[in-house]
Length: 164
Picture 1 (tube, rainbow, N blue to C red):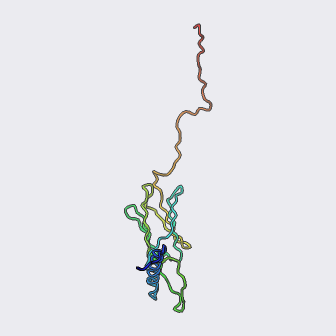
Picture 2 (picture 1 turned 135 degrees about the vertical axis):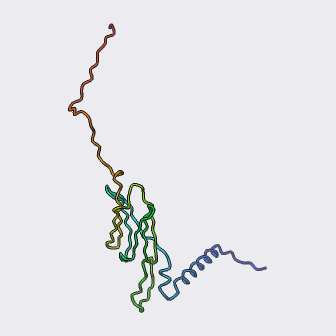
Picture 3 (picture 1 turned 120 degrees about the vertical axis):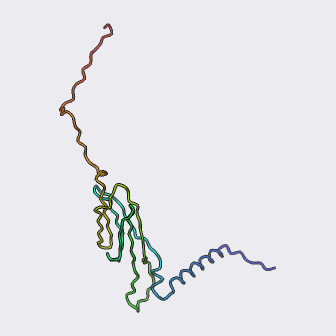
């Protein structure tokens, strides 16, 4: 009978070897296809001011032509693709950490905004979409109607005595 020494980390090493095998096979194709096949999701900030709901998306390294913005059925959709561009055939990349590939981000719009008059601007790798608030949802001041009384009227009370 053979005695086998127990190794508590055997399964962990096996899992690590499998992950390494998958990683190496995905990036060893010899072309940039492995870098662009994954999807990514740009970071987005959503905030509002007095007039608009604003959505800002970070799209570094992209051009305005690479991005599409649409509104359909009260859903704002931002689509695009960031392509991996090899600068020179002599370049030998040691690490590629930036994400490449196609992306789609969709946001259900609240009923307080309208697509009419929406604006999009792309500056310094940041897409900014402004959606105007509906007129009926904007804050407004309400004037109080009534008499112009500068001083409050005193309340007169009768003093009753216990005897009557």
